[in-house]
Image (cartoon, rainbow, N blue to C red; front, side):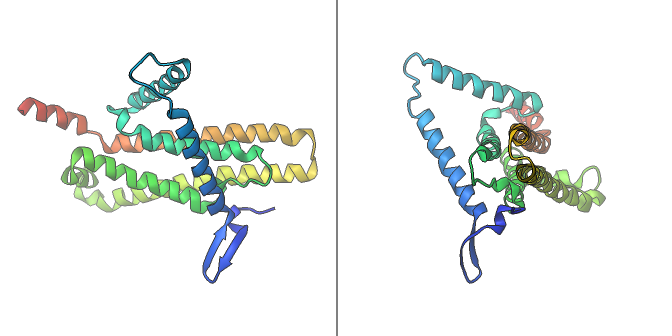
Length: 232
């Protein structure tokens, strides 16, 4: 049993390695893109939508309302990134029902990449809304002495997010593998269902954390926009 799909080497040439993490990551991305294309290709705006489109719109609107409740005043701007993050982590967990599949989220390299994406998305959205100067000022609050501590805080929460997701997903895979070896009948089925539930919960948590981080970086952006409109 492999602790991480990184240890499953498919192809190697010198320092270059193609492992199961890379393979399954690209497989998941291709499947998600294909499913998205199939689901959205028949959407219409020029006539009355069908039940399928109405259901999709209800889900999207519900997600937007939740993002707005957390603190994002314009959720449409962020739903693409946050929704993609949730779908990838959730789908990676759901696919564990297939034999020989190894979730790429049980690799520290994948979870670190997801955390890095959130780490880069926070200043990207903040700068696009507030500008460079206003965003940099947040690292000097409440006093300039806090600059190194604020930077350490940003880095540490990114590291914590990566390790948390990696630990939860890897431990679930290890426990399931041990139970399959010891009791290969009924009990592992229950644990598989619990593992699926855990994966969905982790996808939800990382999405909520990303939303909270972005909303915190945007604090004050709405007030600045209101002031600019008043002066305008």
